[in-house]
Structure formats: structure tokens, C-alpha cells
Length: 439
Image 1 (tube, helix red, strand yellow):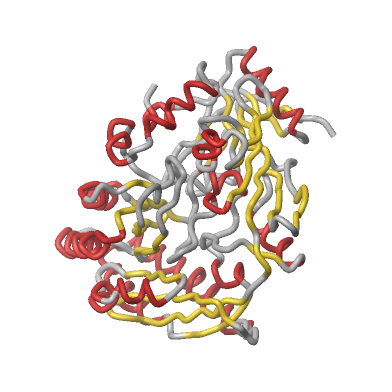
Image 2 (cartoon, one colour):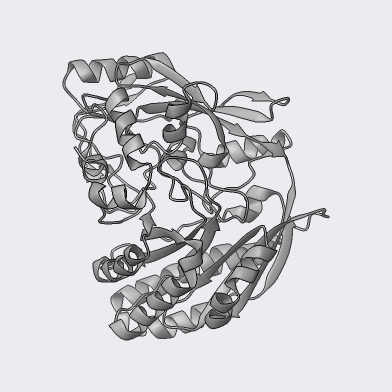
């Protein structure tokens, strides 16, 4: 099998539909050697290089007018080390395939985000995360990385080998090289009991510290224009397995969360005045439920309604104030917000540009239905988040730049110095990286 080079100038679009690019050529390498050759050839031709996963980022982090590398042939598990309890997987492997393959082997990641459509390299490079009291983002579970750097060489790193690269490249933003394989820590497959129940906004915010402390994984959704939330607690369980009934699961996850929700979004987009009434109905539609299943069946859920998203990490101690300010802003603004606001947490980690780097964090994600004007809402929300030294998710809409990041990331200069060393000619540069990292 050999590298395929596509016809020139086909348009690439992201999942949210808010970013497009026309690369000079697309490359689909079938091996690390072919990828390295494509990187060297791009440099010879004076073209920039970007790798793209499934396009789930809402920023232009993967956009390029140079060479777009598609990793869909670089998939599958290279090996499982049961002594070290690690799995090494090719960079283009979708999380969905990794989770299912691990489960068949009686293994699992410790924590994961709430969707699993992304490739492992796309998800980790942008800092994708779930929620956890002790367990952190997907990137924080990485034990080793392999990447092709700007000179076409293959570099491996871990806590022992090239540790300064490892510290940064786990969330490398595509700025340090093209990730070709990732080694994750895994553990024996376990069961989680999920308990979902509605709760008033004021109570969740007042009792947040307690809810966080009492649960391994706590998150909630607040429905703007209402005082209602839906909470979710996931905790390890001795069993027995009691998965969601097929009909109940279809009704809640497909019919209510995707089907009816999609229709509600269409109505809200066509007639914004109806949004508060729809929000009140939506927030009461979901009932309390409890079920026990393997991790990926509990952590993840289908997302078929397309949206645009902004998410910021604030210090966990600042969450209550930030949320109350956000609610007050929405209540007073005349904005019509038809999507719930998602709130999650992560413990501090040691990754250079992780949104949880060096501080216990809470995440607040705001969404708007695709095709609905989102700028006014996101601008007002961002003003609140940045007042609390918020750090935006690298793959979600934000307007921050290098000057801002150098103030909220104590190790920012460490990352840019490493980039100067690994990519002095800026082969992996694009407009987004120029803005967030500086030229």
C-alpha cells in the first residue's frame, strides 16, 4: 500500500461547519515512513504541513493551504503490554475503535470525554477531556509518544526519553510535529454506575464542592433561561452490570437528546422568541435514571445535533462565581440560548499547555446550534471567563492570543522554546498557531 496524493484544491470542512480550507494537496500515508517522506517533500516544495483527524475542532487548528495529512490508514493497535499495563495505538485510530478493542481485551482507559468520534491524536493534541475528581484528560493518560518532526525524523518520547518533549507534546497543538503513535496507560475493565437526576441550578452551585468531593466523576448541564440542571455522577461499581434498557436508552439518548432536540433547535433558530419556553420543556423532559455498564458506555454518548462550542477552564475555586455571572448575563441580555451549558472538572496535571496545567480546573462549555449567530453570546461569555484567568480549550472557539496565554500559562515560554528547537522554519505553522503561539 502506498501513499495517496489527492487532486488539488478540494475543500476541507470541519464537523461544526465553521472552518474550511483548500489545501494544495492531501496525503494519506499508509506508514510512518510514508508520512515522514511526505513531510520532507512538503518542506522541499515550500509548503506548510497540517495533520487532520475527524475535524471535531471548532478552531482552525488543522486548517492549511499547504499539505493536509489524513491519518485514516494509520489505525489499529500496535501492541498491548499487560505487564506495564499500556496499549500503543496508531495516531489515526478513532477513540470509538480503541475503546471497543480494549473492552474486548478486558481493558479500559481510566477516563474519557463524552464523545468518541475523534482520532486519538486529534483528541489528545487539543486537550480533550471528560470530568474527574482524580482522573484527568485523555492526554494525561499518555505514557509515550512517537512523532515525525520538521526534518522528517521520527522522535519518541516518554517521562524517561526526551522528557522535555514529552511534557509538551502530549498536548502539542500540531505545533511540534505530526503524532504517529500514542502509548496510553490502561487498567482492567471496570464498571461504572451512572446516576442522572435533575437538580435546581442554585442548589448545584451552592453544593458543588460537596458533589465534586463525593463523586469520582461529576458533571451537570444547566439550561439557560431556566433554573434547572441535569446532573450526572459516575462512580465505580462492583456490579452487577445493569445497562440501560434498549428502549429507555433509545428514548433518552436518540429521541430526546438527538431527535426531539434537533427539532427544538430548528424551531429555536427559526423563531428565537420560542427558545425560553423550549428550554423550560427540554429541562424537564429528562427524568432521573441509574444504570451500570463498562466505562465507554457510560462516559460517552452520541452527538448528532451539530453545534459550535466555546469552552474555558477556570480555577475550580472560581466556578460558582463564574457560573452565577454567566447566568446573570444571559438573564439580562436578551440573548436566546437554546443549548445547555456543560460543567465538568479536572485535577491539576503536569502537561505544559494543558488547560489544567498546574491547577485544579472546572470547565464551562457554551454551545449554539450550527447556523445560529453565536458571536454575541460567546463574546459576552468569554469576557466573564477571561476575568477569571480562564484558559480556552484549544479546539473550541475563542479569540485569545499569545500575549494572553503567556499570562495564564506559567510554562508558556517553555513550549515556544521547544517549538523553536523542533520546528525552527515553522513547517507546521498556520494562522491559528501564529495567533496563539506568536510568530
